[in-house]
Amino acid sequence: MNADSGRRDFLKTTTLGAAAAYVGAHSTHTLEAADKSRIVRIRDTRMLDSAGKVDRAAVKPAIVQALTELTGTDSVKDAWMKVFPELKSTDVVGFKVNCINRYLPAHPGVAIPLAESLVEALDVNPNNIIIWDRTARELSRSGYELNKSDKGIRVMGTKEDSEYDSGRNIIVNDGVTVRPSRILSGMCTYLVNIPVLKDHGIAGVTFSMKNHYGSIDNPRACHRGNCNPYLPNLNSDTLVREKTKLIFGDAIQGIYDGGPHGSPQWAQNELIAGFDTVACDYSAMILIDKKRKEMGLPFIAAKAGYINDAAEKGLGTNDINKIDMRLIERG
Image 1 (tube, one colour):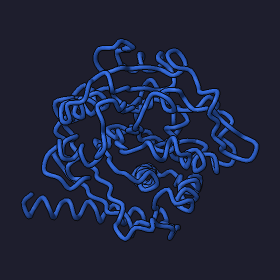
Image 2: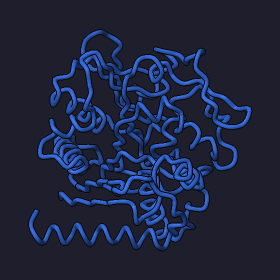
Image 3: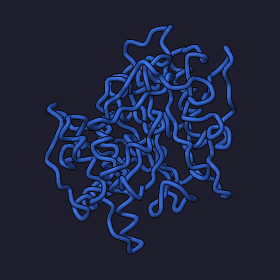
Image 4: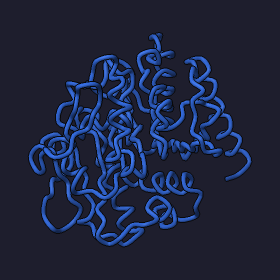
C-alpha cells in the first residue's frame, strides 16, 4: 500500500469513528483481551456491475484481501489456516447465509466464492461444505443451486432437508426455548456467518447476531423487547458461540429504512469481516445510521439495545475505542 492509499484508508477509518460519535458510543463494555477486535471492510465499487448485479470476478480478490487483512497473513491459505487451525478432513463447515429477503439475500456471488476459497486453499472436500438457511425455497429463489448429493458443495434448507433438533433446546428468555436446525447442531463442525446489511423495524439492526433467527424453529417468539434478551442469549449458546469461526458480511448493498424486507436502497460496496459478533453488528449499525442521517431519518441505535447487552454478556465489544477498524478502498 502506498502512502496516498494509506492516508485515504486512515481518513476513511476516522470518518467511521466520527460517525460513531454522533450515533452515540454509549457502552464501555469490552472484551477482556488487551487486543482490539479487528473489523476489516473492503470497499470496491466494481463488485456491482452496471446492471446492479454482483460481479464475482471483482468479489474474489476482495475476499482474499479481507481474509488476509483480518488474519494478518500474506496468503489466503495462511488466512484460512488461522480461521480453522484444527480443521480435520472429516469436519464439515457450514456457511449460514440469509435469504429471507428475496430482493436482498446474501448474494450467491459472495457466499459461493468464499466457500470455494476455503475448498481451494486447504484442499477441503467440497461435500464437507454446506451453504444453508432456513428453507430450500428461499435459497433457490435467491439464486442458489440446491444440492443434497454426495458431490460438490451442498446447498440445503433446514425445513425441507434437515428439520429442527428435537433433542436440543436453547433457552432464549425466561420460559422461552427454541430448537436449532439439525444442520447447525448435528451436521456442522464449524460455522461461517454470512449476514446482510439491513435495518430492522424491531431490533434496529439485522446483521450477524440476528442471522441466527434463521437457525431456529420459532423466531417469531423472539421479537419482544426489541429482540432483547433473545439475541444475546441465542448467540451465547455453545452451538452458535463455539462453532462460529468467522463472520463475513455481505454489505455490497443495504437497506436503511423499512428492513428487513424490500429492495436494496443503496450500494455500500463493501465486504465486512471479523471474529467479534458484537463489533460486527455495531459496525453495521454505524453504517446504517450514517446513511439514515444523510437521508434525514432518525437513528436506529436506540432500538438496537441488544448490541450493548451482548457486550455485557461477553460476546464482544461495542466500544469504538476497542475496535480496530480497517477500511481498504480497492476501486
